[in-house]
Image 1 (cartoon, rainbow, N blue to C red):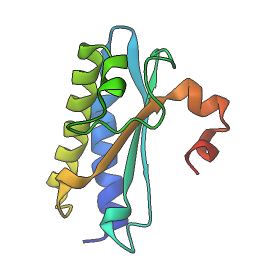
Image 2 (image 1 turned 90 degrees about the vertical axis):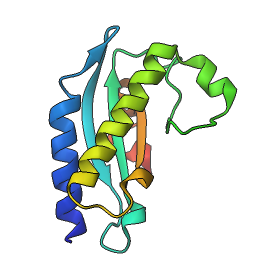
Image 3 (image 1 turned 60 degrees about the vertical axis):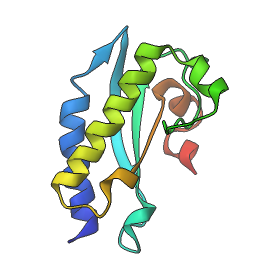
Image 4 (image 1 turned 30 degrees about the vertical axis):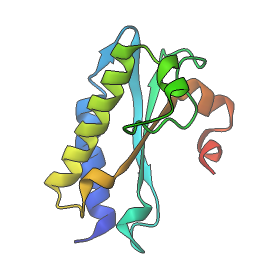
Length: 126
């Protein structure tokens, strides 16, 4: 498996699905990946940037995981939290389709496109 091509294929397929999504005035603005996947697939990070979500509602660098701190979960409306979980699962499903090793461990993060832009774009993630 060419890990870079597999990541491109999976994220491209996920992007086509997620960018059609919107809920409560929030929509997916961007889906991309980065990481040294040629060294190890565990280095992959997928980001989903949302527009329309107030920055004070969506935590910075939000990675939904079971058992997350109650304070973080409480900041999110249950409908938004469920949607983020659904999108994470959709991204992982696309990685499963391309034969990614253990797609359930693909890290899928969410953040506000406004916050990322205000912090310098891609530099925000360094």
